[in-house]
Image (cartoon, rainbow, N blue to C red; front, side, top):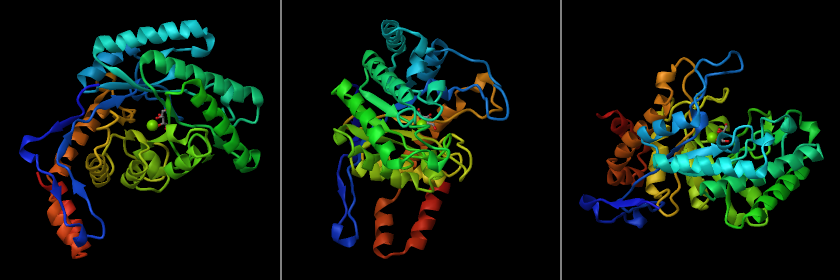
Amino acid sequence: MSCIIEWDETLSLTKRRDPSSLAFSFTQTCMKIKFRFSIGPWNISEGRDPYGPETRPVRDLAWKLPLFKKGGFDAVMFHDDDVVPEIDSKSAARVLEEAAQVRRQLEDEGLFAEMVAPRLWFSERTIDGGFTSNRAQDREYAIERSLRTIDIANTLGTKLIVLWLAREGTYLRESKSCVRSMELLAQAVNKMLDHDPEIRIAIEPKPNEPVDVAYLPTLGHALAFAHLTRDPARVGAVVESAHCVLAGLDPADELEFALAQKKLWSVHLNDQNGLKFDQDKPFGSVSLRSAFNQVRVLDQHAYGAKDGACIAFDAHSFRTSSINHALDHATNSRKTFLRLLEKVRSFDEAGAAALIADRDYQALDQMVLNHLLAS
Ligand code: XLS
Ligand code: MG
């Protein structure tokens, strides 16, 4: 694994505040984390929305990977069928052959696989959900496909499986039972945990879309659910900024909540304009201050320093963008992250602590704004 932490010669001292002066204490270690960035092939999308067709041509993985590398990305996140297209029509042996081929492609580009997620929401067999479908044969299909995803992850060289439980919920509240669905979900996750004792499963909560009401809508639900499984220590979370906004929650607080439980195994940074359709806007596009606070908690808690966890940007191009600008939303998200990191590291923490001690939150508010506005 490459070096995650770089010590800054000029800031080699550990600053410690007087804990008695604050209701809480915060230790800034002044180590510089070298964040690693990740992106998914689906983030170069074709521009289709529910009201109109594609606006850009389809590009394959061989076209996307060098672009990712050039854009400053270290890792790639995959759905199972991003690795093996039309996966359902292929034998287990063929699936692993194709996965091995993708691993070679990644290595040739100097990239690695961050995670693999089963795409359980596209098949005609998961119309009513996968693990929580009311049809036994659909549930079997979803579990089987998830076990194959683990085999693909092993071939690609990652132990991180992401579960975005897109259709595990209801369109109609009376159609399923929540208790029954929790049992079914736990059974499915247990089978995955048993399939490979080394994998970790990161649940990506989202409150709605495509379903009306999702079973694991927030991080709190996901982490509580982990305790219904056989091995809660191997069930953690991915926090996506936009999904927090859709649930009416603060993304920085959600990140920190997961960090406090040592369950933040990936992040999908992006932005979202209020309680509307899922927008996957570039990071910081709607609220720079929220983005600043997200970067701040990740830096303060040395996210990724120990386990190599990546910063992923799960954003999409605007529908109006041409194929020549197909990655700009992601490279811009990364640039914004890095600029905000400078802002985080140059923030007057001692000044902020003094204002907190005086409970002068009005001045603290203005201090944050002035810092963000300063060139
Ligand atoms: C959808 C999710 C999805 C996951 C990966 O809203 O963000 O893209 O990140 O399955
Ligand atoms: Mg996501």
